[in-house]
Picture (tube, rainbow, N blue to C red):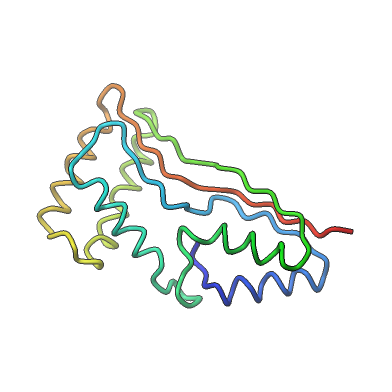
Amino acid sequence: DLCSADFCDHFAEILSASNTGLYAALNYDGVMEWSIAHPLDQQVAKDFNQHQHFDKGFGPALGPDATAHLKQAFERLGYSVSVATSPWVMGRDDGDLQAAFLEGLEQPLSEIGSLTDVQIRDWLGFRLEKIAEAGSSCVVGHSDMLALPRH
């Protein structure tokens, strides 16, 4: 999800030339949901997904579209491709991971700029406070892909 379409296409061609498979795990798929709602949740997810398309060092990133793009690239090369969901499902016992995930959203949200710094801080404060609440959970969608050459 951090690489560009051109990078992924070229990578697939290189693997195909050597008849090599690929297992790509934990590709973010654009899903970000919480069991306890906040009015800004949808905007936060939208902004983060937009930021996922920014250049991460390999050209404009595919972000949530990465798995679908890779699947098509390998299928065009004659590969057998399987995709499965592998979401992060974080509950109270995963508080440290949830906190790290949430704190990592602050910079991308600020860079997009559709939310004010006050809105971002208020949303983060709410989310961090809710981690320990009974029934609180966060789901961050991911997918895994296995591409194998056909013999």
